[in-house]
Length: 68
Image (cartoon, rainbow, N blue to C red; front, side, top):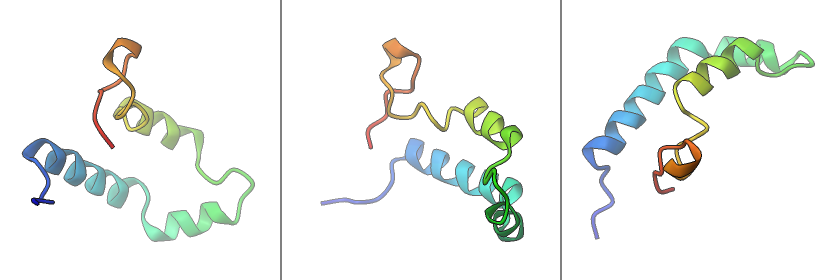
């Protein structure tokens, strides 16, 4: 059984890794953890803009239709 990522999965994985490194470095996450609002609204908007919340949503509902 092959557990390697497909090229498409690798692209998503590396893109998310770069996004997280740039937008959510460890220091920022620790700072947010000490506030009432853990993740700033601007970051939620950026993640939504990249489709991070729609990976497994079927295309007929506006998602990507990816498997888990």
